[in-house]
Image 1 (cartoon, rainbow, N blue to C red):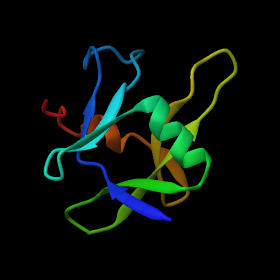
Image 2: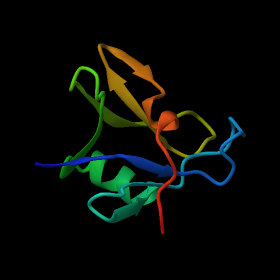
Image 3: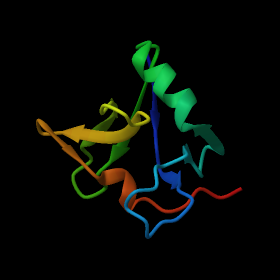
Image 4: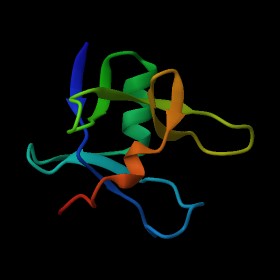
Length: 94
């Protein structure tokens, strides 16, 4: 399984808590993927995506959250809990 470090996100309105992340990417490696594409890759178990805590070097893997009546969304999972590491990342360029 291939793994990709995520260093940026795209969200239509950063201040709106109800807006979903539309894309994730890595500005250094110059790639960006749509949420739908990433969901498919994670759920097929063909690829994994993660963020890195630069203080500890620890990876937080990205998972797919499905709630009734809502589109699937991306969220990080580490230390046995879902968290919001993705929302702290800067915007993807380009």
